[in-house]
Amino acid sequence: ALEEYVYSMKDQLNMQLQTFISAKDHETFSQLLTATKEWLYKEGEDQPKTVYTEKLVQLREMGDPVVNRYVESLTRPREFTDLEKALVHYRKILDLYSQKVIFTLVCYFNTTAQWSVIWTDVQEKEEFIGRRRLALHETHTNTGTPGQTEDMQRNKNRSGRQMDGCAVGYASRHRQRDEGCE
Image (tube, rainbow, N blue to C red; front, side, top):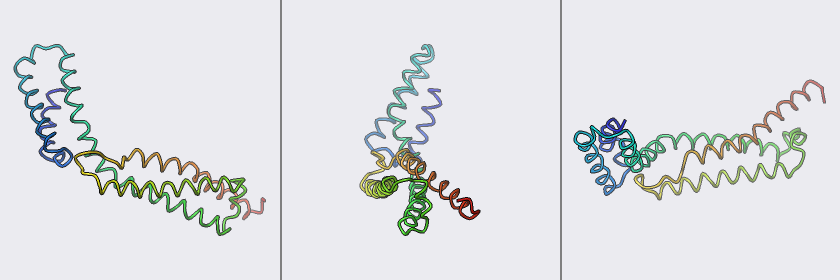
């Protein structure tokens, strides 16, 4: 595993990971990888597994953040889009409610306070996206990643649980009214 990691990271550092690591860290990490490669073929041959594991952990401490920034750069655009689409959907429902077009939703969410919570949640998520986009423009790819996809997924899922219940509640109440069950 250690040898495979060394060769893989040496290749990736000069290709797809190059823009996700600073020049100084690139140099330091490259030297560490080279030293580890040399160690493997000299003293490393007769070492116990724990020594190999320790060396791999040391390399991963420096390499994993770089790989994470790379992966984040690939997944972030899709997560932004997914969260924005969900918010557009939720805002449409809220707008219809505020226009009294879907007044049957009041039966599902018993109080205006419940709707207020959802409305506030949607507004907070829209502000969240704005802050993340601004932070991304101000951040270099070889340092932090302020728009963590996990944050966006968590925000989308939290709003989704609230609003999906709303859509289901609306659909069932709408169906009942159409069928004359109310």
